[in-house]
Amino acid sequence: MDPRIRCVAVDLETTGLIPGHDRIVEIGAVAFSPAGGVEAEFSELVNPGIPIPRPASRVSGITDDMVRDRSPVAEVLPAFLAFLGNAVPVAHNAAFDVGFLAADTARLALAAPATPVVDTRALARAVFPGRRSYSLESLCRDTGLAAGSAHRGLADAHSCRMLFLACLERLAAAGARTGPADLAAVGGPVIDLAARAPAALATVVDLSRAIEGGADVEIAYESARRERTLRRIQPLSFAIVGGSPAVVAFCRLRGERRTFLVDSIREIRAV
Image 1 (cartoon, one colour):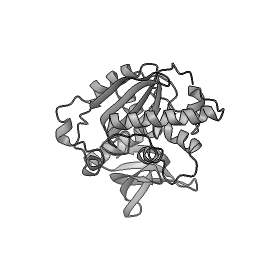
Image 2 (cartoon, rainbow, N blue to C red):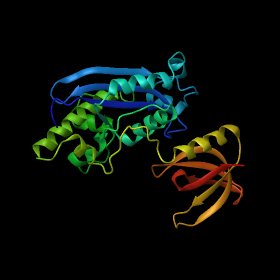
Image 3 (cartoon, rainbow, N blue to C red):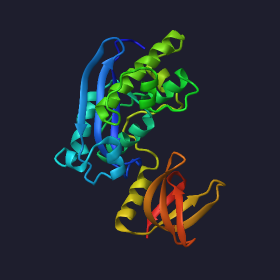
Image 4 (cartoon, rainbow, N blue to C red):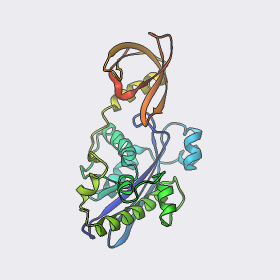
């Protein structure tokens, strides 16, 4: 990578794991170049407009009192996008951060750059194979990188920056291609921050509204065997199943509580 290229490491703290349902509560970012060090920092708490669940608050340390008088994401996100500019975005487990940023970018009709996002977790898997954990905290601890307070936006953005530089140095020493597009493709299909919401975002939003209103919806659900059934369900909550978002609901067809993968819901409509 050209050592003069401007990069921005970013980390989000959120109320949960489901873009379109959960909300951003903090954006931390640091602008840097591979050769010139840190150029600038961005750190903003965000009022999510909903209570922060206790499990999320325990992880990040961010409480309702801390965000009550802060600006909403509609004001903070444009400022972050201006800070990002045309820099190369870098994030750890980038799909998570991109999912939330893309969801809000699309919802607010904002323009975001289509620059490929570099995922430091994917880079670390290539550079440090065979590890049990590829969490940012674990990688920084075991590789001797000085990490700040884990699970706060700016501190984790700095940790992400240091891990990125460590991976970049090893890849360059091995003779690997280290252009932004090359690095962004290490973990598989390239993702970007363009205003392109996750495919399941509309479904999540509809399910979220049904949960809030206690209403039933009708879904066309496709099983793992490609069998499609029409179900009337009452969505109750969201969960993560096998790394994918799912909705826990009372299924009128089965007469019991069932779990449905969001990505397997082909159609949804209110009833």
